[in-house]
Length: 298
Image (cartoon, rainbow, N blue to C red; front, top):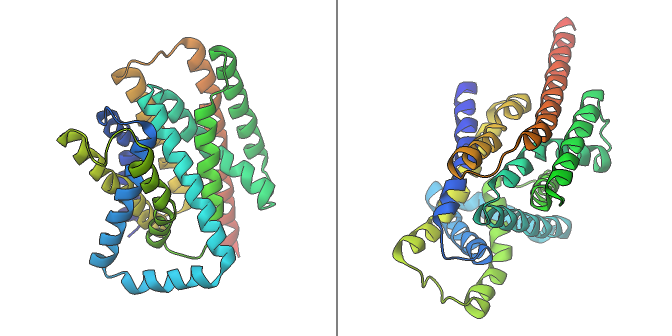
């Protein structure tokens, strides 16, 4: 069961890394329109998935929970806004040729998780966590100095997704219901844009582009569902190790396929971030081994 969970996790993160290629194929569509189509077809796919997978009763029960609990309803509304911001920023970065910035966002995301947990959940920041955050901060500052601008896309992606995850922890519903409701909440706004403000009529693109836009629902949902299955059967430590597959694939694509500029100075800045990740991972693994030994000795 554990090996199966690892395969699910590896599949999810590899797909998330390769999704960069998918959005590169969507040409002639603005980032905002692409995000709106992604929301629409993700909602459609999830509704079909719920019906075909026999999760209809669970979905209805969790909808009733959200309806009865206004706090949960407010939180999932905020979550839908945050994931929309994350999706738009990612699509914008990729379409603008800044895949490396998108990669950076996913590299620093786990460290932002630590920071938010310390601030909002009052979790104690370990020495390794503090050092990791400082090293990552140095790397981001170095990149800002080198490029002459703050890597806003990276920071928006990292903080929006980390805050999204923080909020999701407080809502006791499945990932299937969560994604369906989140896309459903933001869907009316996406439809208003597509039918009222977009300069291109609904799905009035070449056939290949229309197929790619329709497939965005599948591309969005499948990695998330795989990740949800992985999270059920393998430890957070294991997930922590394999989650860096995603930004590493994106970084390799940025340098070797899309030929984005990657100077020695940029490598030095990324090195601080990688070193921070190594410190964070080593500290987390060390605590897990120590706790396991203590539990065995008892």
